[in-house]
Amino acid sequence: MITGAARGIGEATARRFAAEGAGVLIADLDGDAGERTARSIRDAGGRAEAVRCDVADRVSVEAAVASAVDAFGTLDVLVNNAYSCSDHKEDFAEESDEDWLLDLDVTLVGAVRCARAALSHLAAAPGRRGAIVNIGSVNGLSYFGNHAYSAAKAGLVSFTQGLAVRAAPQGVRVNLVAPGTIRTPAWSGREAVLTAAARAYPLGRIGEPEDIAAAVAFLASADAAWITGVTLPVEGGVLVANTGFTDALKEG
Image (cartoon, rainbow, N blue to C red; front, side, top):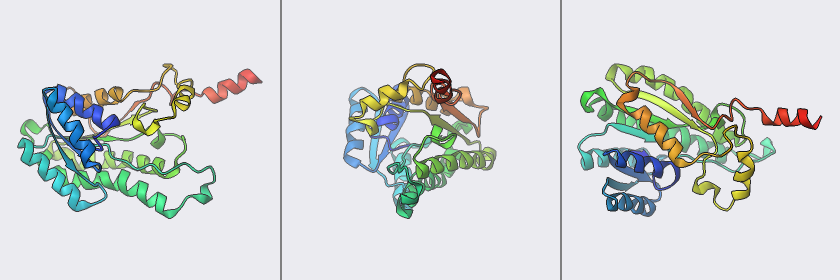
């Protein structure tokens, strides 16, 4: 089950799992887009179903988890990818309570709702192979703007660690992938920004959704059977670079 899987990172992750033989539930607030993605996967020979899911609604989440189990007989992996990111405001005082509550409720508490609904099914997965992979962000590890979104992503890191400890006796692993800038529909029409952003990355480019999908697939797989509670940055080196500082030295 992958939330926010109709497009972007979620879609790429769904396609990666389907290509490896998994049955995938596309859970997305945009039910029509989710069905289009699921149909495309089926047309390519994969197994996929879609359900409209609002991660801010506990009933909707529980229904989506039930749909995954009904469709495929078991639930082995949950990928918490759905998020909300309110517009960045340079003046912190202009940020509203509503923006903060929305970003926290969807991005952080939404993942909590999904994990809570899925955990018993993940614990029952054959071979103790249940796994949760949360999609965080470099925003949760360093400052990149978008205060409410960043705080929610930082909360996901702590939630991942805590749940990893609590879920381990049930054989369920919990990890987090922290992407850098990724070329997704959220950046549509802003190619110039992406081109400029690429210069901040030591590897010389921004990320593609498939870069994140590969990391998620690894953490969900048996190859990561002894890995839990970790945050895996997939970010082209931006967290170890300080291009602003080095550029300032050059100008000086």
